[in-house]
Image (cartoon, helix red, strand yellow):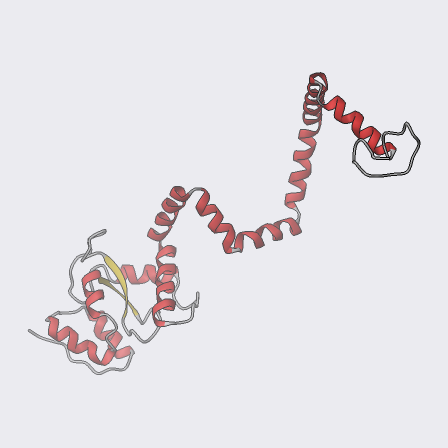
Length: 227
């Protein structure tokens, strides 16, 4: 015999259509399912269930989200790079605006500088070496360019303020960071401290007093240039 529902060969009586009770009930349900009245009843039942259980499900979800294991799981997923790539792909324009705003802040600038340090000069990423407080101190100290004494102009291609490594072979710190304009920073490049005096003389700059103080801290003898 062949079952009318699941088409499996089975041993049974002559007038038997289905191999089991489950197959018989399933065939009945399939016949009822196609009726429009059954579909309407099902929709009404679902609506009633949603109305009665919606608030309870919300309370359960809030309780579940407050637990520590749930929060740990969420934080693990957010730390993963795939999560941020998915978020960026979902709404790229909003994320670009957020990243631009963050880069303009002091914390964003420090992160950019440290990532560039790590990429170009392969210095280790130490959070304690150069902080937000140190950056504020350097900004107050150096209101103009340290080398050419030109006033800073924000969003200018040559005279916008940048943070320069005084000694290019060492990572940023209070004694190894100065504010310089973009033109001085780019022309200085990776000049070592021994050749920095020659560069200042060639450019015919009259640098600020802080430059000579930093030379004394790094224990390099200097004479002030008088033109």
